[in-house]
Length: 138
Image (cartoon, rainbow, N blue to C red):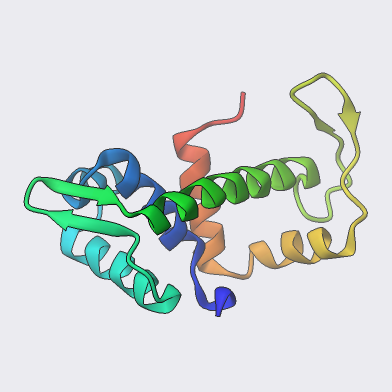
């Protein structure tokens, strides 16, 4: 099941929670609020649990939603860290870590496979590009 969930949907879920409304999140993400709401509703249906309580004034995460968001933030941060450590696929370049260590790309076959497929998956590539626009690496 998890393989059919798009990364952009997971990122949208975080933004909705942080904004406290679909309208606010849709403005930040620059997509229509009804499309965003449908995307989150589809995720909830796939998971079989409501992540948010919807109110006229906005949304509030359910207990299950809070647990999901805590784990989701951790996972997306771990993914971002892994992608930064791997660097450009096939480049062989060293990546300067935030703590000042000069680390070469990971030799882990799974991460190499993920990094290698990033460019061929438009959803993942668009998601990574979107994140880099929000948080440019200095």
